[in-house]
Length: 250
Length: 90
Image 1 (cartoon, rainbow over the protein chains, first blue to last red):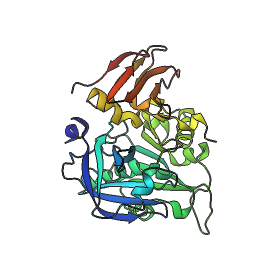
Image 2 (spheres, each protein chain N blue to C red):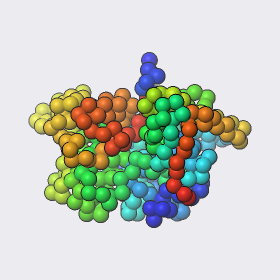
Image 3 (cartoon, helix red, strand yellow):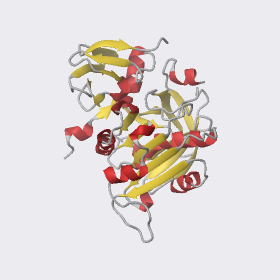
């Protein structure tokens, strides 16, 4: 299945939206039935294409949120008000509607779950999405690979997958979930309340001697900052896999 | 004002485009920079997609590795900056 997931001609196909789950005020998960779906690896993405009546097309990439073994293909999308595609996906698309997509795409930013190295996931905002696919995959295959997630959000209400992450982190299977909030300090909050820095990484990340597999995903400045800190702390730059969202798009 | 450095993406962002052209998964292919000789998986390279074409730069020396322009049903692919591409057999 892994072979099928990364090879073969890339063709556009239709998925049918089965369910919408609101994650935060700006972010929703969309669950699709895709009849010809060849399967995917945790961390891969799909391209989505919208076609207007006059033939104008807009294309965007969205990370897959579901685990490879999940029945439906899930995308978790943040609505960007000035975006061309996300306001349609989060706001206009309804259950039963069809959406044109192609994938799975990518092979670099993937975690297969078949290696012993500890897993270090660092996500900023909707950069959590491909990391969530990895954590769901890890849970589905009952992997005991030690894993840590450091997740940076603006405020508590913006924390995507908050309850599910709480459950996964409490399962006692070697996953630790650490949150930091950059714009809010709620009453009783025990997590961090600042941007990711070296002290935070020293407290939460596996040291470079443990040779963790590192995945960092988020907006470009977030990814650059986290990756630079890890390299300065002695991590091998080539063991740090990054995926940037950029400053525009949507 | 958005800074150019904040518009930087990486090879993951052009995984679909590269697969259209090469017909195989390319983010795990390794490219050798013609300028500095650094070898990087294409998932790691720097990518700018906000110009009319796509510009791919070496993450080590920032020299241009590739430029890809698509239009009118055709591609123009400039690979001058890549000395060698190593990829798995399909």
